[in-house]
Image (cartoon, rainbow, N blue to C red; front, top):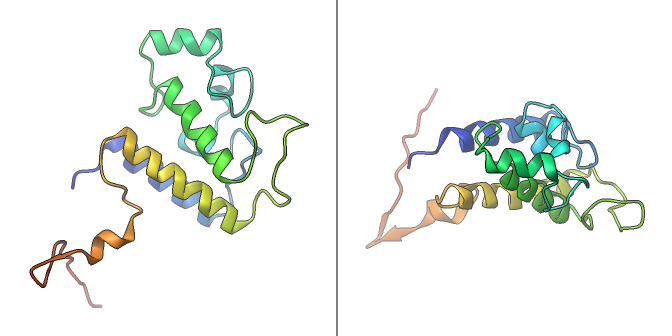
Length: 153
C-alpha cells in the first residue's frame, strides 16, 4: 500500500512527538496540528477558538485560495485538532468553563487521542487505518493476506 507523503510525514512527526514527550493538547505548538506543522503556532489564526471547527476570516481566505499547510487544508487542520482534543477528554472549543482532563499529558490519554487522529488522517487520504493491527492477522484459505519480510540480525 502506498502511503501519501503528507500522511507519512504527519505520522512520523506524531510518533516522534509522542515518544519524545513533546505532545501537549493545551499548547498550540505541541498539540497534534502543532506537531504536524513543525511546531509553529501560525495555524491558530485559522480559527478564533482552539478546538473549533469554524474557520474565521483568515482561515476562510486560505481555504478558498486552496492553500495547504504541510499538505492539509485549513478545514482539515481544524478537524484534526478537534478530533485530538475530544479524544483526549477535552470539551471543544477550549475555554475556561469547559471540562478538561486532570492530567492532559497522560500517556494513555495521548495515545487515545493519537489513535483517533491516525484513523482520521487515513480516512482523509482514503486508505485503510494503518493503526489497525488486526489487519496483519487476516488470512484467506489458511494463508496470511499480508506478508512481511522478517530480517534477523
